[in-house]
Image (cartoon, each protein chain N blue to C red):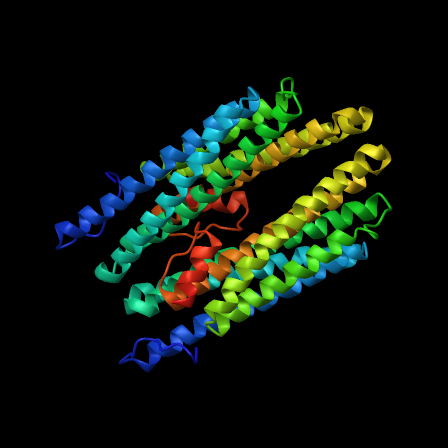
Length: 237
Length: 237
């Protein structure tokens, strides 16, 4: 938390507790990043072992959610944080929630990989899947980096990327529907890819939500449900 | 909050603030219930006017999220709530978040209604859609009621219903896939119904999450990611 000044505390112990919460959040973020990578790889390579690993990782992610929430609740109860400390605790709590939901979506992607393996067909050739998957993974990483570095401009950039992903997602879905209509034998496989795309798009949304929390933390402004141009103005202020 | 004793406060003002947060949460819940009803009706009757109304209602839901979050943050900053007051604030914040996501899903259902209207076909005959829609609406209502009445047993029952909905959802999706394969001309329409079903299933998940918050509030136990039997034990303790 170098760039941001926590409120000066009489208690070094309080500082240590905040730092600890930050550390745990970043650990959870790292875990979720790995989970996305494993899930996505399991899908692209139709590898059920990898898929199983991604699904099992979800338990660790869930445990971290419980641990960090307990930690922040204790800080709230004992330390009565105010101003930027309070914003920090709130944004940690909300980010943890987003990370847990990203973990759920990663597990769903892995489940699609297992279904694809069952029907004996791979998603190779679905250029859009690889493309969107790569972008979304990058977004989660950037959102977490922007939290670690308290960088509101980087967070804004994640929000902008989400808009692009949503557009690409729409195009990819439409193209899959066309494929299904032209070749009904592809329906089952196309649906697996469609659900995986949906999960990727959702992960992008969650990354954007994390970015919103970073802006709240750094700028003290709640930018949820605001137009991107408005958010940009507030970040640049 | 009759059945639950808030910690005794020296400040009547503090009590009024907590009561106000509770009132706003219930208002937001009512708004979201209406939104689900409108969205669902728009889907079953393929009524674009109703659909548009459901989508517009999302703005009000989003505004309430911002308002209540501001309110709870102020209480945290000024009042330093502890014990059951703190649990109350935390569960309000988390419930608000779930309600906002339910609102998003309701808007997505309404969008499917508009797409169905474009292709000139209605979802009539999809018995599963009506059935699951009714169940999920009931779950949201029960979850909110259990919050208002601080009824952990009722909350547990919502969690149990979610399991049943997930199973029915799986069956409905499989039956739609069969329809698509048998009659490729139905693909587009079946996909609209599928996305709507997915949103309903998600709403069920969010209702379950609200129920988990009620148990946390009443029993002081974090039951997220726990097996239903374990949760039942903790509720009955």
